[in-house]
Length: 114
Length: 116
Image 1 (spheres, helix red, strand yellow):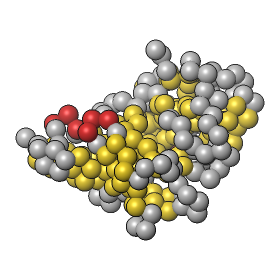
Image 2 (tube, chains in turn orange, cyan):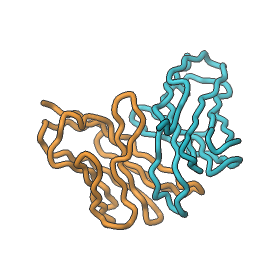
Image 3 (cartoon, chains in turn red, orange):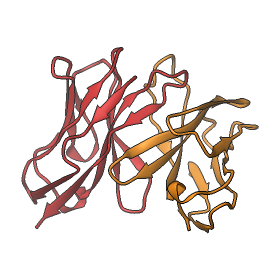
Image 4 (cartoon, chains in turn red, yellow):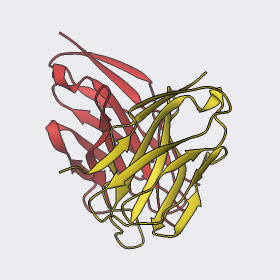
């Protein structure tokens, strides 16, 4: 079965600092990987996805993630944090059931200090 | 652009009561699913459907029932509510896209359920 581990349930950065949110996955087949963002009292919104094309994936709002098979990682980064980036971020891997539904990590809440 | 619509947004139940969370999508998506979100546990799959008349269990199906009579609707039924079912519930849908899940999941805004 697929699984996802997000290291750090809470991450705090200063405005303008590098954002690094960690995600490691386990998969018995080549994975498809996703990052979603959730703003307060809202549903989840896709940030970016890896689907076996380029290993460096660019998403919305200046975020990007790099797929590293040797490390089974898909960490999310942004060079310079903005106050509006404060939200909860979820890493997900495609499942191995018939519908290939997503398996999510526990989430990382990003706080941005002025 | 309605997308995925969930109702109600908030609900308080007493232990043992039953209720149905409604989910409707207007994007003609084949796949629909229900997740529950609990602090520190991310989203866990309850049930899913790959088309009208086809449903299957996810990771945490106990205490929940689903049906898919139309492409648009995928209601989630709580048969006898328990305090452990206090959670935020999300409905999500996506297009069928080959054998692997390369498609984006579209989420509703969530239904917050409290069971006393």
